[in-house]
Length: 299
Length: 332
Image (cartoon, rainbow over all chains, first blue to last red; front, top):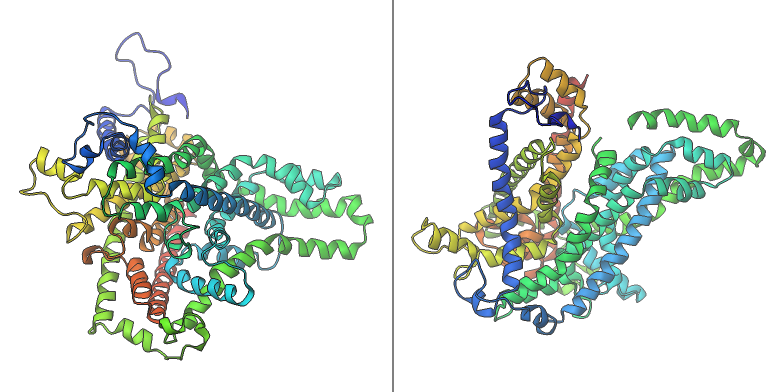
């Protein structure tokens, strides 16, 4: 942020007056201790996941050991045959990908309407959509389960047990937060820009896609990351609404850890494999998420 | 940011009126289109929210008044009405079902208060400590966000491994290395399971508080700190007098969101304990899930869900009322 906290050049004499905002020594000490402890707390499970995934089976069935007795990549090969991990992976990818794309597009339209137009029911809409976020998932699970089964019986559209049903469900999970965040983001795009586009003969949709969307790319990226993570990590609905062929990683991996012989090194390898895409994506794009939150949600 | 919203509303109208294109085109269709367009844009979101959230919610409320056991699942409309029976069963705290629900509710309240408090405390402390630049700050920030970015099940499964009785890290450290316990403890069954659940929940949840508070801190003008420093305010005073009051609006939303997410959390306990949660860590979501899908008694399960929803509505309403009133006087 600002450079006022640090003197840019090391001063010649050691005891020069500090800049007005220089933190006292005690603050630096407590900061050091606190952040170190926190880093250990955060990283230990990550270390366990990575190191155990490279251990031979004997290392994870006996007493826990910090260092592997030998490094092996076998778990990374075995995971694909012990359970149909590849199929789970594809299912998760399809479901999360489709839910993300649909959710972002729908959120863009809604946020544009709320941000740029005054219309009756605007407040009701935003409040309703946001408040769905607070309701317990368990409340929807039972009726949605029945609703999908009944729609299937009545129309033949298989929502229950299919990827389509899961996509539909997941995209509504990320929708409220996405709309909320994009409204803030669109509000911060100067209106003069799209007014000018409207005067130049662009339709409202032209103004949206040529002016507002390009200017709000960071917010849209952040929302997409959020939507993908939500769908990729969901367990409750996946555990009820999928069958053997449509099972996602969330359910598949859980079944893995309840097998009779628990191959912890393989499970850790599988956990790592399913985490890498989202964590990498998130860390690459976290900057956008923070700016998106600053511009939109946290105002 | 806020000013653009206010001024642009009026700006839009003036531009529309003055623009020659709008005047020349048939006025009525233009007006209809202008009025209809926002609704058209909202339509997909509305339909989906209706299908997945609002209609099921209404169905759920209807279901809670029915005797909906496995015999009626295929065609739930034919299930007989049962009046308030499901509610009576759920709320009869002398009978086993009601007693178990009350116990689960109390466990959830305790768990939620502790988890939200710790998440907020750690997240805020970390964000405030990392407000100033120092070497490695960017890296540390990325590291801290890893628990949040990890898929819930992958993270929780790792914790399950760490909490194993014979080959887990936790017992190895506490018993073998630090000799704090007489014998290795069980973490995923019995009373310890509450602690295990709390640790995992805080580990997973605090980065969100960190993220939000960090974003909120960026909106505090630097001049405030500079002025305070010139007036001789120390670090702690600056945090107490500037940082925390400025974060009030952010905290209002953050704590509510954390509360609702933690209270409704299903994923963590479900992956941590499997289908049968130990009594000490029997969170309400898993409890209702079990009451519904293990016994296939959807009617009682729905009644419990509705009660949960009512509780959350009341808490949210009271919370918003109290915090907003305080905020108005503080802001102006």
